[in-house]
Length: 335
Length: 255
Image 1 (cartoon, one colour):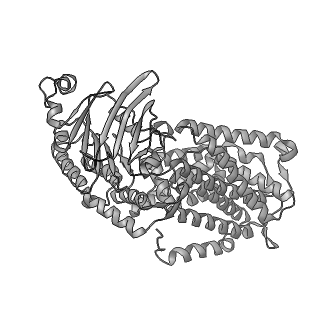
Image 2: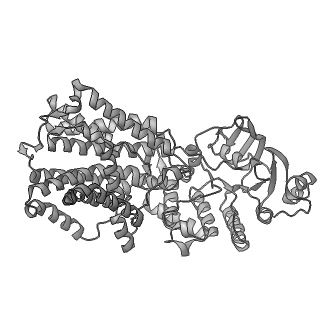
Image 3: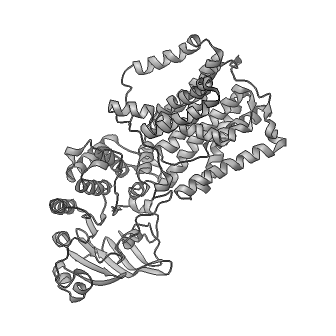
C-alpha cells in the first residue's frame, strides 16, 4: 500500500535542514540538545508504534531504552566494536520486551499498564543493585564514544548525522509497517480489539510484534545515548524519563508519523529554554503540558494535520480506565 | 431441508461460575437459510453467539461448522474459516472512515495465509474491489469518507454488517442488528438481509424486533432461561402459547 512521496520538497527540505543544522547552530549546547532530541525521537517513534498505532499503553518503554543503553555499554566493554555493541543493545532490548510482553500482554487494560511500570522498576532495581555488572548507582564511566568506520563522532555536530541517519531508518521502518497489512491491523486493534479479532486479526501476535519492534527502537536510542554521553547512568530507568517520552508522543501528536519527532524536539529543548524561569521552570512546564492536553489533545502535529484535513488521523489520549475491552477482550456478555 | 447443515450446535451448555446461562441448546443452519433466535433479555442468546464464535468456552456440547468440530477454537481461527459475526454494541472501527473500515475488513478477507497464519500474499486491487463491492451492498457509497463514529445509527449498523460480509462468510451471525433503529432503517435492513441471502450467505440473527424477525426468517427459535422453548416457522412460533406466555406477551405481536 505504498504511497508515493507527494513532492520532492518532502525529501529535499528535511535533508537540507539536517545537513545545514550543525552549520547554523553554532552554540555547542544547542547542538547537544538537538542530538538528544534526535535520540529521543528514535525512542518515541517506537513508543508511538506501541501506543499511538497499536493502542497499548505501556509505561515500561524507558526500561527498554535503559536496557539498550546498558546492553550496548556492556557489550562494548566486553570488547565488541561499537557498531556491533549498539546492535547488541538493540537486540537485547527487543528480546527482553518479547519475554516481558509474553507475560504482560495476558493482562487487561489497567493491569497491563501497572504491570509495565512494575517491570521497569524491577529493571531499575537490578541496575542499581547488581553492582558487579552495572557499577550500581555510580553508573558506568568510560563508555566508548560514538564512531563509525574509524571516524570520531563524539562531538555533537558529528554525532548529529549518525543520530539523524538512525532516526530516518527507524521512521522509514514504521512508515513501511504502516503501509503493510500489519499497519492496517494495528490500527484496527487500536480501534477495537474485539472487532479486529472478529475479522480474523490475531491481536495477540500483533501486539507482541508491535511491542518488540517498538522496544528494539527504544533499545537503539538507549545505545546511541550511552555512547554519546560516554556514561551509563541508572537514571535512564527513572519514571520521569517515561513521563517525558509520553509527553513527547502526546504533545507532538500520537498516531502520526512526524508528531512524536516534533514532540521530542519541543520537550527536550523546552525545559532547557525555560531555565531562565529558574525555580518556576518545572511549574511553567507543567502548566504548558496541562494546557496542551486540555486544548490540543491531538498534539501539535495532530492539530496541523487535522487543519489540513489529512487522512493521517491522530488519536486522542486514551483513558485506560475507560477501556472496557482490555487487552484480551471479551465481547459484550449481556444476552 | 436436506443435506448437511452448514452450522450445527449440539447440546451447548454455557456456565458463568454457578450460573447456567445456556442449557443444552441445539441449532441447525442449512445453506441459504436465515434462522432467528429470539427470547427475553438474559435468555442466553448472546452467550450462545459468543460460544459458537469461540469467545466463551462452553461447559458442554459441540459446535460443527462446515463439517469441522470447532468447539472452543480460538475466535481468530473461527473468523478466518468463514464463520463471522457482528456485536451488539460497536461492530466497526469508530475513528476510521467508512472506506477505511471496509478496506481493513476487505484486506483481512483477501489475505492468503500460510502455516501459522503468516501473510503469504495479498492483492491490493482485489482488496479495493472487494471493499467497493461491499460498500455498494450495504449502501454506504454516499458516506464513503465519513468517519464511522459520526454516522447515523442505521448506517453504523450496516457498516458493522459490511465488515463481517467483507470476510466473505459462509455463515453470518448478527447480534441485534435492529437495536436502536427507527422504522425506515429497519425496512432498509430487511432489504439488506435479502440482498445478503442472494449472495449465498446463511445467517443466524439474534433480534427482539418482531416485524424484522417475521420479515427475514425461515425458522425462528425461542430461547428462554437458557433453554430452547420452541422452534418452527415464524407463524408457528408466534402462535405457540408457551412462547406468547414467556416472551411475546398476551397480546402477541411483540414490540
